[in-house]
Length: 149
Image (tube, rainbow, N blue to C red; front, side, top):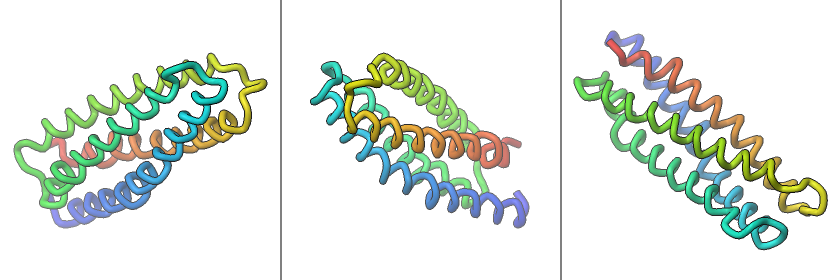
């Protein structure tokens, strides 16, 4: 990888860390807490569990990127990097499945009478989904292809 492409990759990694990983770590605990509030109020038993599971899965995913994949990228890549990228992209797909499940749960709740916790959850969730979509697209379409030789 030439020096200019490596500099671009490093900038993209830094952007992902600062813009998305920090935001997800800030937003997900609040979303999980709101889901627990909804469950405690009008929500069905177990409503918050998929939110907590997604938060845990994303934390593990980000940790793998930060501890393994991104350092490899910042060094210019190596023979294992494509395998790690494939793993990360597979996890992106799994996260999409978890999100679809959560979306179905949210759609099943009646809008009327659910209270402010549900309205706050829906607002926070919508913002999180927009960030996650932008994050995943940046990785899948710009960053990861730089390391596929």
